Amino acid sequence: MAYSDKVIDHYENPRNVGVLDKDDTHVGTGMVGAPACGDVMRLQIRVGDDGVIEDARFKTYGCGSAIASSSLVTEWLKGKTLDQAQTIKNSAIAEELALPPVKIHCSVLAEDAIKAAIADYRKKQGASEV
Ligand code: FES
Ligand code: FES
Image 1 (cartoon, rainbow, N blue to C red):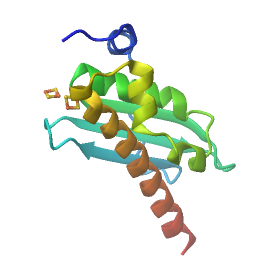
Image 2 (cartoon, rainbow, N blue to C red):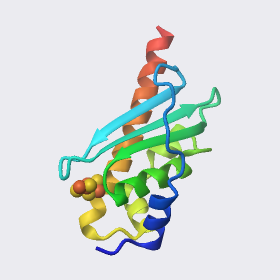
Image 3 (cartoon, rainbow, N blue to C red):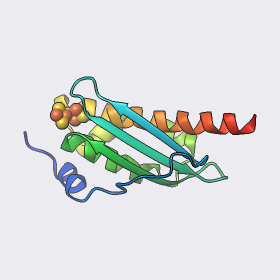
Image 4 (spheres, rainbow, N blue to C red):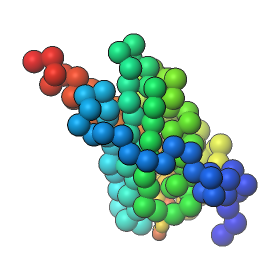
């Protein structure tokens, strides 16, 4: 299958690969797997005291489209509030990367990873307020 130029660009030059300290209370970690193919994506965000995402990192064990989707969303996440991040849709990712229908689930994985990272962060904040 032919990958789009944008997928190839992100695949060959992935942005923001890496790990943030998952025990940091400012860090939210989302770990999700795609039942369709077994690929796994870990997405992490670090949120400032102003509620704005100041850093995002990913590590994806998966296909080129999954790597490109996670690389792209780390770029999109930086500078967004959590509420803005929550609205990122897999359809926007798929459109930006020109993903073919069989690769749509790779972008769903990225959307799910964002939501999981936000949920983890919010859970930590709730826990630290007790
Ligand atoms: Fe094998 Fe996604 S199906 S990498
Ligand atoms: Fe499964 Fe891409 S083929 S995440």
